[in-house]
Length: 170
Image (cartoon, rainbow, N blue to C red; front, side, top):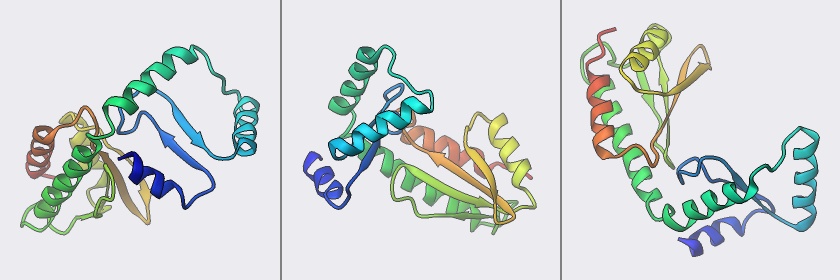
């Protein structure tokens, strides 16, 4: 995994790695780059009011995430693909969501779903009432939702989410 990450990062001057999304740390990001870039990033962070409080605790959580959760990211990516497959199946089946969801192919643990404007807010509300937390916003006249699989979402949760979406009545 480290070798693959190094190979990907070798194409860029600067890389930002979020330790919370996917890796399960409560907060924190890493910025990788030249010493000049890092110094500039620290200065900008301070100018914008950011600071490092309890840095040891934050660093410990980040190190734990890096040491214990990297390998399992593949599970999150697999779950995102399963979620996409399930949502596409529902969108292709006669019913209230037929032709109303455009599900992008996920490249990571984030899945983007465009919801037809005719049912965007009703669908979003239904998901919230059903305990499915997705973010969404206006996009080209419709609603684009961001679904994320992560440390706290397993394959059974994905099956449950697909089942809940399949029961949407409009």
